[in-house]
Length: 444
Ligand SMILES: *Cc1c(COP(=O)(O)O)cnc(C)c1O
Image (cartoon, rainbow, N blue to C red; front, top):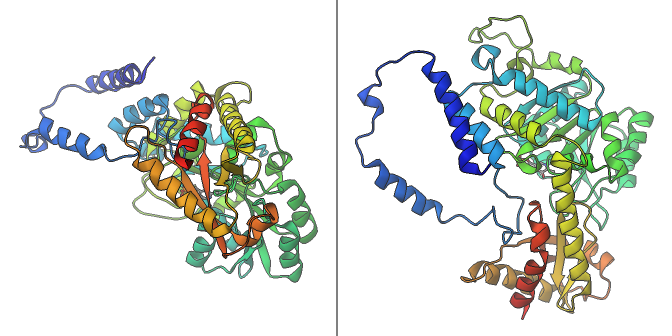
């Protein structure tokens, strides 16, 4: 089924449901007195400004459209517009949220019952995890890697919690000896680990960090906003350790085929639900069951996000050899194939072997400053090419980390800007030869 057919069937379902409630007269006030077709044309013209995130020639940032299955499900639920803040406002989509959250908990190996819910983003999901961490260890610091997402430092500031950024290894993994030194020094409540950093896609050694929890009693929070779904492939030891950590975040709007507005936070211990307790006179109850609104920091949340994720996970189950795992495996192959071509290239060099689907590379030059200049030029030329555009992104790397990996390059700057391609669409796999050709053209 193509996207139009999926959307059509989904909308027909809602329309049949609407008809059950009997006719009523629409208000003239709901009818805009403008030329709507002309307005929509203007809208389409403005939307033309977008970069083609859907196309494999977009090999830049962490961006791609939702899967058509998610689009159809989201649209159908959006027309109804349930609010997963309360069961009374989302009779259909709240139970779907409970199911998908249980699916995610199983994927990470969290023992049941655990606690969790969808959020509007990875930022909010991390905020909730750090907030619960603060409530459990007031006055204690949060330790995270310098290569962790900047949201951790920022959300600690929001929460009034001290955050300590520690060294990352040249390959982007957190330096666990630096983490241990902090923890040993005292005053640390929580350590943040990232299975898939936003910059390089590095996977922190969560399995080794488990010892910190055992030995020092610190809380372990896992930020899998980007890389969490790679748990499915079972490729790295680190992922098997997530189930022994205290909380985990994953963004279905990154690798779960969803439109924006879909993050998730899970807690191993359901008892942390007590921190969410509130007694609001606005919240209406028709059931004794736990409201998702009672275990979530946000109030209104799109029921459509839960509906879309639910249908998507029926179509793409959280399994390794089919469903989402099969899709992610294609992204991994794309990254490895691309890395292989870069290693053979005399125009480009591979920065490091990709761990997930992010490939970092640089135009061969003798000095760091020249690499920065060439990377920026290639980025701009790629976007400006009218006939055959190519969209990449850049990454600023610390000169010491770069020098550790590439000692032959002259160190004449404090940072180096290199190229970065997030190959998060399975369609990238077949496109790799073209991607490489386009890059070579830009390098000449
Ligand atoms: C994207 C990302 C975030 C932030 O999530 P949003 O959904 O953009 O708010 C946090 N951590 C990591 C590792 C990420 O990749």
